[in-house]
Image (cartoon, rainbow, N blue to C red; front, side, top):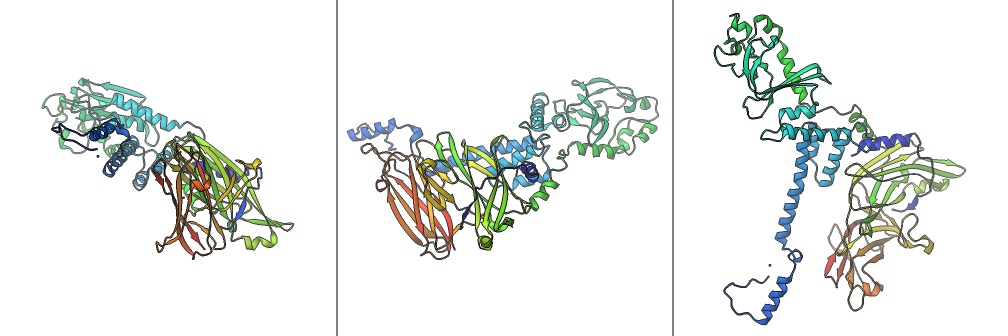
Amino acid sequence: MSSERILYRFSALALGVLMFTAPLWAQSSNENSQAQSAGQKVQSAGQKQVTGKQDETDPLKRPLSEKQKQKNAKALKEELGKSYKEFLQDVIYIITPEELEAFAKLSNDEERDHFIESIWLARDPTPDTPENEFKEEHYRRVTYANEHFASGVPGWNTYRGINDFKVRPPDEKESHPSGGTYQRPIDEGGGTTSTYPFETWRYRNIDGIGQEVTIEFVDTCQCGDYHIALDRGEKDALAKIPGAGLTFAEETGIVSKNNRFANGGLSTLGLDPAQRAAQSGKEFELLERNAALLRPPKLRPMEREDIHHFIRYSMVPFDVRADFIKTGSDMVLVPVTIQVQNKDITFESKDGVARGVVNIYGHVYTMTDRAAQVFEDTVSLDIPAELIEKTMQNHSVYWKALPLPPGRYHMDIVVKDVKGDRVGALSKPLTVPAFSDDKLASSSLILADLMERVPRNSIGAGNFVIDDTKVRPRVEGADGKPASFRRDQKMNVWMQVYNLGVDGQSNKPSATIEYDVVNSSTNTAVMHLQDSTAAMGSSGGKITLQKSVPLEKMQPGTYRLTIKVNDNVSRQTIAPSVNFAVE
């Protein structure tokens, strides 16, 4: 969940930023070819004709077998999976164990995309700006590491690469890429020796570790594979050769070179007793420092606790639904419906009228954290005081139509009960489908408690208006509970069908539409209705289905409505379905 975004907007709502009122609430009661042998020399004219036709067929348009479809789907899944593996490689040194565990539990790509976004957002030092400086700097360092530190493995997977982008480039760097003769400093025992290739990185300060930090990388295999050396004597290529590369203490006989490996501990420097005593106890500090270097960076202090507190104590429950209606080849209308139970709104009575006020904020943004749509309203609900108790069992709905290009988004919704000073928040993925121009498709299948034509001057404008019809959807519950209707109500069905084939002679579509209702518990058919484009007087490749289904003969329970569209011209079929409940 893009929690920061919700927190920032919650704060704005709590301060009363939304200052205008729009009474947009509406009351309601409650989606293979013939293969001929190479040895054949004689063919009939008919066979030649068929073969010639097959040869002319575009291989890309040949129908795929079910086995090939499954193979293609598996290959696609594997290909898509690679991107998430690459992401985990990219962030392996900055991701926390808790985040890694959470990622392993995600069940679909939408959740993974949102998780990836939240990883970067949680580390963005300036979340209110389009740029994410942390992410940009991270990938800059990964690129630099791959270019400068690769050694049979990618540079980001080497110790120098890890340190470069986990900490930062050093303030000073001493490099000995060929090793060779080395004059030891006094704190390493002095004297002259020969070394393996090594580098020493010095930092004036590393947050959380300390000041004047020195890190040594040694390539003992002389293959370019540098690793962090806990022992500064590890770079000594003559360490195990008797009488070679002695320190001052070993040259004067104060200590024997054998002592380097006989005294235990991490260090193999040939130090005199006083120097060794001075370094006593620092080995644990060194181990602790290296552990700190490999530890993922901390998130900003408020990231976990405050957001967790906010989510836990959200007090205004509400449900959200998004529908998708084709408006062009590169744009989709996305009506967003928000439903709140009246009992969860605080009303205040004055002059015989009970008023509830709710602030609503919505933010739709791309997977790259760019704002696509933002809306905010202060909406009110006025009810006669004597009817307030009766209407508590009803709900109120708010509707906002958003034009969006096809693609993956995420949507944050915040609802604040103004008079009760309570807040609810919801974050969910939003995938806007791409409607092709040649494949039979449909809009969302909407079940509505209200469906009526609007005046000519209101076409395409106003709340719940789609084209020339006002369609007020019933909203499913966040817990998966389907939209519900009472037996004394009519359930209105609205759906658009796109790209119907047009008959070459009549210049009209030819399709049948079947409406089937099945009892979900018993799997028995309850209702079957059939219609056709001929009876509807339709023309063109787009039709709008509007049907009112009576419910009085249906027993309370859960049902499933399926609308099957058979295109007799293109020979394509679609069958979208939706669950609903009868009370």
